[in-house]
Image 1 (tube, rainbow, N blue to C red):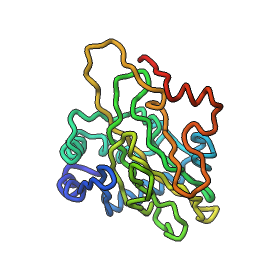
Image 2 (cartoon, helix red, strand yellow; image 1 turned 45 degrees about the vertical axis):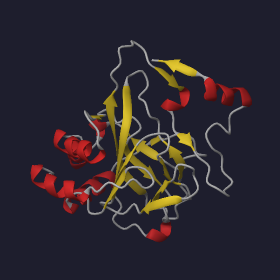
Image 3 (cartoon, rainbow, N blue to C red; image 1 turned 90 degrees about the vertical axis):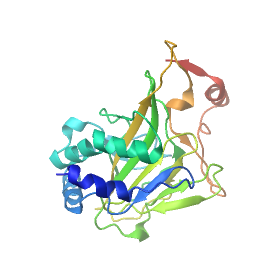
Image 4 (cartoon, helix red, strand yellow; image 1 turned 60 degrees about the horizontal axis):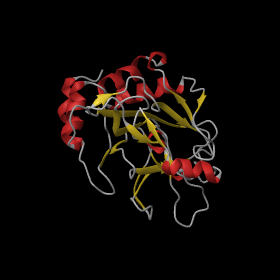
Length: 259
């Protein structure tokens, strides 16, 4: 499996760019024979839980439960949540005391089918009822025979939502790691056109830090706990809260929660 002998090589592959926000795009990320085994395990799984609203993430299925995952996928997560790998992320992204999320809240195995998409958004930044702040996303793709004509590349958009600065194809062993905040706009917003017997598969892992405060509670905006959907220029699509009535949108803007 993935052990310490791979650490140096993996660290050298992670080169962080600040355009459009801190990110690292890595080809041939992990040992290919291991990633292919993980892909085969994924193909045999039933990702039966539908994620979110179809207007923002159509056809998306997920598996969050680590205990239900087969051996190689578990070992891959174990490595990417190991202290050796956390040390690399801290160094590369100038962070301290990163924590993995073994509950895989919002993460785990993600799968989308023909016609599926994930609209451009920034992710939730705080774990509800905790002092954990989300700092990084890591996405590892598990699609050996993906055709770029099918689409599905993850797009990294600039802060002002004027253009996609980078597009990363979801082919096997491609990975992207990026900072998580209000401006880390990303997604694959157009429907994928893969055959009906093919799906877009990825492993999504999130990393946190614990905020130190002397206060027994924290004050957070509602949107801190939710994805914030963004609108692309000249595209007829809704953004966060557009589908809510006026007073609910007003509450989203001004309402705070105590945790």
